[in-house]
Length: 134
Image (cartoon, rainbow, N blue to C red; front, side, top):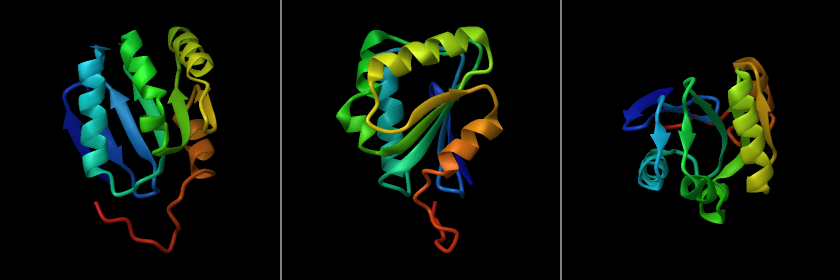
């Protein structure tokens, strides 16, 4: 696994083919969101991957960021999306985001990392026989 810290997030390019973005305890603007997306696209070994999103207790983004993250430009790189939402506040935000974004890929929120990863592994495009170069 390759892990890179960027302003606003830590990005993990996992060996199992899952792209994990852990957002800092920040309120992200559209500029932050686009910078994280650009960095991820430039460094990802996969064109399409399951996306695992987690964050601290206070991770949120502005309306423009939410629209951008649900855009075709972003979604075409996702085979599935799992939100880790262990607190009630995060579950409410994740559920709201899922309803608004009307995802074209399987999208759910989970209370545990294991549940989220099990869901995403069903949508991983990386074979056990393929070595991922990162």
